[in-house]
Length: 252
Image 1 (cartoon, rainbow, N blue to C red):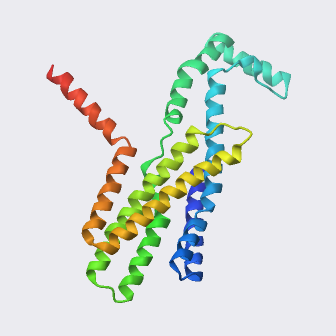
Image 2: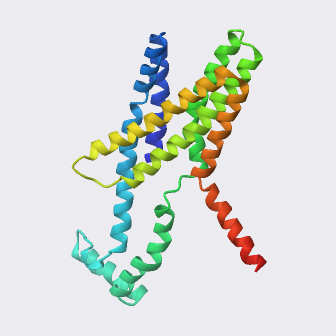
Image 3: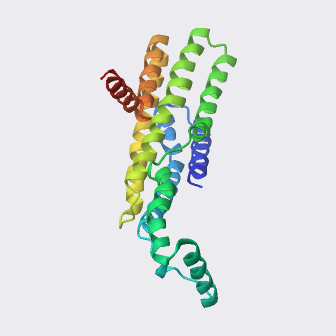
């Protein structure tokens, strides 16, 4: 559900962005419209924080599982279930220990890592990549030279709309997980996450635009820098350190 809401938010961002671009022609207004187009991301992040909070509550409840606190509408059903548990696990205490122990480890390990499957990351990027390709098509239809097309593809489509956006989304997911707890300023927490995400996206957009306008080499440098950030944010450096440690242990 959370991934679906973020995906809808991404599509909404792209939709609002194109509407704002069609209404504004001056550069300051264009950037203002670009910032305003990110507003749907606020609601997506709030849903993501809520989902993460529910996940953390599930982890806490499993760790402190108490069979005696379980509710049942019928006393007959309750006695029947307890009898089955006693027959299968020996006692209610043994079942509770199983839930808090092996079952907890089996179910919670994937949740505690806050991992998003790679295919979902690719899915979340489809709206922004499509938007970048739309600009590329417009430049081509307008008779833009091949050098400009190549520079735009490398700097904007690959560098910004794919790699930098992936880093921005990763940052947003991390902050939603880190500040998922409910408080008196719950919506303010989401607002701060949204502002950090917005600054990251706008900053990357400004760099990508300047790079692709200047030269293909700057566009390539920006794309490489964004690719390095993707590598680091998705645990690349940790994998290198682990590989080095394994190599040293084998050498010894």
